[in-house]
Amino acid sequence: MTSAVIAKRYARALFFVAKESGKLESFGGVLKEIAGFLAKNPDVELALISPVYPMDLKQEIVNQFIGAYKIEDVLANFLRLLVDRRRIQNFSQICQAFGELVDEETGVVRAVVKTVVPMSGELQQKFAKILAKVSGKQVVLELQEDPSIIGGVVTSIGDMVWDGSIRSQLQGFRESIERGDLG
View: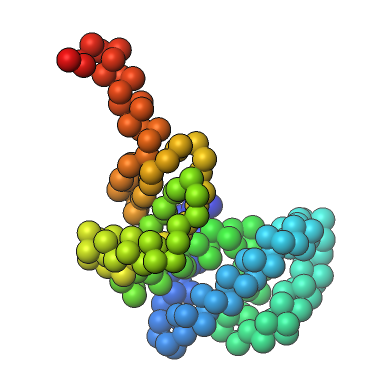
């Protein structure tokens, strides 16, 4: 079974429990905090994943998380289960899949917006409003700076991509010239 399938299975199980208890947002927030901590502290993540370290040490590390983040019982048991079943290496994928399920449930889509320079707050709001009309859902922008696009904007929501970059326009001109279509 691939890690993406495993992650989706665990995320779906946690999602249903969180939804039943009305704690989608709080669970999502705690998962993001822990994922952020693990990303900043790869040694801790390695200790949880490595077969070299005994299970009781791994459980102690998880118990430290539980105490530090004041994690409630359901989520605490979920984290312990991931360690017991040696699925903690899928934690970041599980968090991502959980977030996607929450977004779907709440009618939110994430749009990745690439520009050369940072967008102003006003332009971000206008852009989000336009994308909300196009998608029919609430849009959360994930802004990225990419100097390779030269100028303009490249936006993607799911598998839809709108490429208004100067790089793509120049590429189009180049292809037209090579085909001899200019005239």
